[in-house]
Length: 305
Image (cartoon, rainbow, N blue to C red; front, top):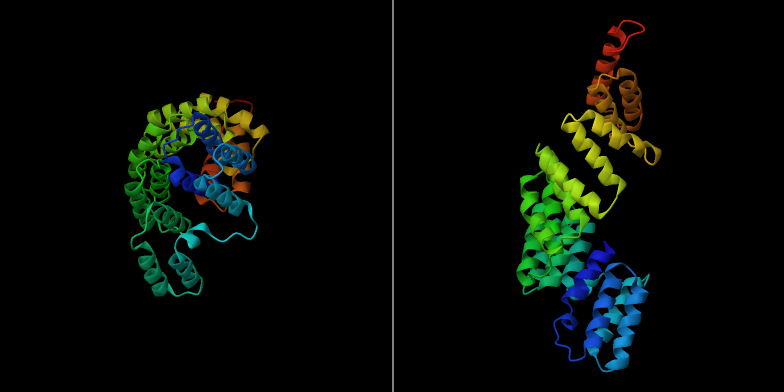
């Protein structure tokens, strides 16, 4: 989350909107930005300092260096609070159980506020699971700064957490339009499509995400999608190798279901049993386990379907 907030700060800095006569300064600025996004704050600071060797009076660069120092400082105060003290008061009111006071401070803080405030306010609401308020705040951030495309992703995530899967697609699609190499956007769209039962679309999206990033969670999601499409053998081929690296209830659940789908009841039972052990009293999973056990017990001894 720190990187997300820091990216917000750097993108919105007037340093990025200024017109640079010196192309080397622009190059150093781009490199510093990339280092900051990756969380390499010392690398970012180094390139900001290079800019100062060329433009020693560049106050915006100096401000960015101070901002980076605040982010790595163990005693830093919330940047959002520094931008608007009313937000800090709102958070303190919430901690004290004064919900009415919290709302009052938030309203005061939002008066005349700009992009930075709305972005932090959106993050605050998102973290406290007040997703509708978070979406409203992120949309206000986009009105203030349409170039901040991460806000589209934040809106999509809020809709996903609310179970509004149809609502995920438009904002995440806008995010992907501007960030075509960001694998997480495709993975989120795959998850939303899967929840909507649009398994072919979900598979297309997760394949794209995997092409950009061979992530084990994406492989798991692909296996779940294949199992949901009744492509059980392909699901097993995708999921079985993952058991060497991860052991989760979902992995064993869908592996068990895939084996059940090809009528391999022994392996289905073994994997569903592991899923139950790792799950939190999943009654549906237990029922499926009992169903497979009955199938297995009903088979003539020494034969397999």
